[in-house]
Amino acid sequence: MPDADFQKKLRAIVGTAHVQPAGAADTIGGVFARLVVEPASEQEVGAVLRLANDEGLAVIPRGGGTKLAWGNPPSGADLVLSTARLTRMVEHAWADQTVTVEAGCAVAALQQALAHHGQRLAVDVLWPERATIGGILSANDSGALRLRYGGLRDLIIGVTLALADGTLAASGGKVVKNVAGYDLPKLATGAFGTLGVIVRATFRLHPLPRNTRTLTIRTDSADGVERLMLAVQSSQLAHAALQARLSGDSAEVDVLLEGTEAGISAQETEIRALAVPALVVPGPAAAWTARQELWASSDADQEAGAGGAAGTAGAAIAKLSVLPSDVAGTLATIGRLADVRGAQWRAVVQGIGIAWLRLDGSPAALGTILQELRAELEGLGGSLVIVQQPPGEAALDAWGSPGDALPVMRALKQQLDPRGILNPGRFVGGI
Figure (cartoon, rainbow, N blue to C red):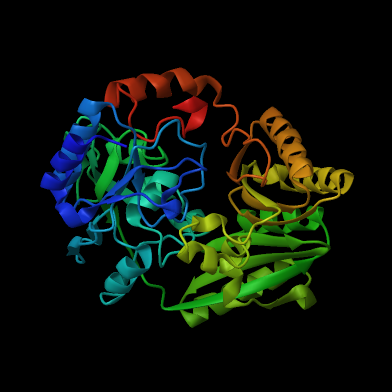
């Protein structure tokens, strides 16, 4: 436990009520934290980090905690730095279609506020009611809308980071065409909180669609899934999202259409021309929460602080990246490995080649499948990131091979966090 003098200084920064001993719900990858601190401003975040850096204490940034189980276990966890009090929408320049928001704001709360002006942040993230802006940026969680609107690196145009030494570094701005300076917004996105604590961000926005319609195309094979997805992608459709849902012998491809009723109807006609018309049916709105449903019955455990990993006892979940033209081969490999090891699987495959896979079976079997599948995907230039470890097994590396980028990543980490206090050991290559 950090000593009494350190705790006294911490309370002087954020107030006595906002420094508490960590409990069981504050564990990270099985590592117990010591204190939880809740700053109320970016200046307080900087002051807390400066104090921790001077003492060489490990700091774990935390938003809504929905993805706290992702990544490798930290090598230390002295402080959990919560953004629970950083929830303001700083500025909504609706005429410019930009918004600046603090990192602790929940995504659903932001979307509700933006909707009053007919706008949205064009992402469909996991657990939006609890997931925060800082958290989705750190984990780079965009969802299926990425196909039409780009990922978070495309939508973010400005960020303020609190660096490990307490410095507040800002980059970008609220003007959509701002391209000057060091691209800190894109750098912080997906860095898993290892380069700095995101305290505010500015995004480009998009109008809410006038109408939406989901069409589902039924197929019976991995080859059929790939063929349909490639056909939709090669067409002149202006679809907003594309995914396939696979479970056992069931395979369905979902297409999300947005726009005017006339425009949507014209696109539906084109989709029916691409597929056997009888196999095209109105899709359920819940189709677009299929990725989240891979974490079955997650709500109860998340309320207890277990994050997105709830409801997956006896299960492992991984995020795969492959070329769209390798989807059928990848699904065939998953099926083969699962059959050999006596495991069950289901998956959600997005049109850009990102797939989310759930495996159910014995922990030893799941660990073997993940390792063998990762080796095959990396041989194809793809990747496999484990976001829910097989239970009861020695932890597998969450990230896999970083390739040639690791020296650059380590140099950047050394420059921005030379003492290695931010999320130590949790990211690629033990960064």
